[in-house]
Image (cartoon, rainbow, N blue to C red; front, top):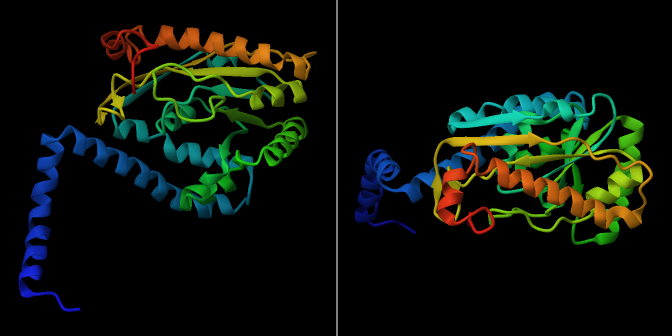
Length: 287
């Protein structure tokens, strides 16, 4: 099918005007700026994964490859003017396996995770991530553990294998117990898989809390500016002697301590404070 000369002229004119339109949208439309930033964020991660794959492939699937991914991703916070402050890193047990549990707000959690990620620690992720192009392959090479949440039997089997891996290979795992991204400025109820894992392996739980992003990032308002995020590592919670019957109380206790810290660091002027105050409090703010 041939295009009329007028169509070619319109396409050529659009290409010529594009260098002028994009800067105009960037400076005049906060929504356009939000979409540009998110598109670059995701595209840049996919590109970095392409660079990481051949380097990681030398070792094959190995948890030590996570160091390579972390090194390649650490600079992203500077591109977006996000200052990440880490407190309590001394709480990480120095020489034993453990389970990290953290709140989950958005894809920007990756920035805080890379800032504080301990050695030989890999996330547990939903299986869909495995098919996310170059990022999925890079994660697989770095030892990320994928779980099909729709198949409960498979997930339980994987968790049992992970418990053995924790003990035999000195590996730590990072879990988002809310199970999904939470945009309501608080914390969703915790799923108990991470706590069953820690109790089964009899290893400590290390809670990590990231402050609210709402002073610089809001998906609903299409707002993404520079800002500050605080990452707080809490003291480890022992699980020695606990049984599966203790898991519900354990999960509730850890969530309560994390929610308390989340409210504290999200309203102290170091992560979402101003926006949350305008919204009427942490529990009512909407992302």
